[in-house]
Length: 448
Image 1 (cartoon, one colour):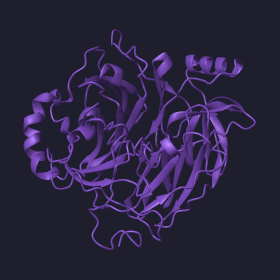
Image 2 (tube, rainbow, N blue to C red):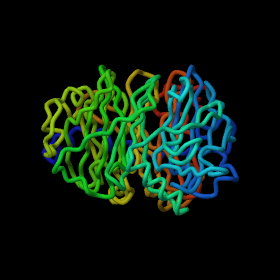
Image 3 (tube, rainbow, N blue to C red):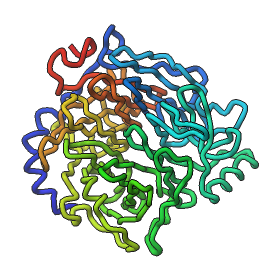
Image 4 (cartoon, one colour):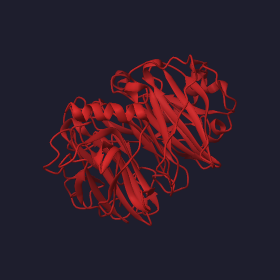
């Protein structure tokens, strides 16, 4: 990793200096504000904004905002097709725990379409674990239909024990892709387990881990990503406590194969995201304690099946590493170092030009004198090895301890993506409609 630093520093030196400290100030109190705060329902007392998921079907876009892991529910918001979102929740009964046990996951996932027990359903969300008719992984769809998916025996047994003893269960992080028929990736860090539900399927396939691969750490599976590529998907699972990211691929027949392990600097795999950073296909985005890197998805999918327990740098895989960068400011670099740069990641086409931007959460960034208010840093990469910081986003009403950027997704609205970000320190979630890359008027009434 460090071998690439001199080359990248030269490229970044002329691009970050002018923009890195230009905090975008948004007034979320005026009509047609470029930043919209979602209203927290009274039923969600803790952690509103801890997790986020989004789904789009036939131009209809939603955002699901989750609360404290295992103990609070999630609320659904309708964003419509343009720039007039409904700031009040349309459904706050996601994993509410009323009547039957349901426990929210730290990572939740949205589906354009998901296979139910009887038919394909639209605008569905995997939210956690619990009991709906039977015990398992809980799904809830736009028509308020709920059902559960079977899990591996060890996961089912651990959940049953938690329910029987009336104790909060372990976390079950979840991730999916943005295709019309996504797959669902799930993990159980407590048992070092991961499994996959193929598209249009309610059956799971366990993900094999090679014998001798050191993944015995509580951080196993705390970060997940699914990269959609021609021919299938790349499945990524972070073990940041070991500075590793495990990789599998699932082909069109749903066959799952382990293809390798990436290692890096401390915290490697702290957060993962997938998306089209450049127009040539989806990529895997990885953060560690100080950096973000972009790895080519097609190159990872082409890796052969292996049983090796060795881990390699992404730069050692030919053509895999597209670029990487660290958090820099011209004013006070120490602010970046203490900001938890890379705590969350997302990829979205914010300007609608066909390739994406990488949004990096820095939840402990100092914003206008407010400690730990948090910020979002937006990078674009028009050419390989040339990441450019093009925008920073914060909330004009930022308070110390907001921690904006602890969670991020990019809902698709109209012909482009916007940003939704959680600030769970004070129970906030915000929509960011504008980007510095949009020509005047191209973003609608909210972005003059």
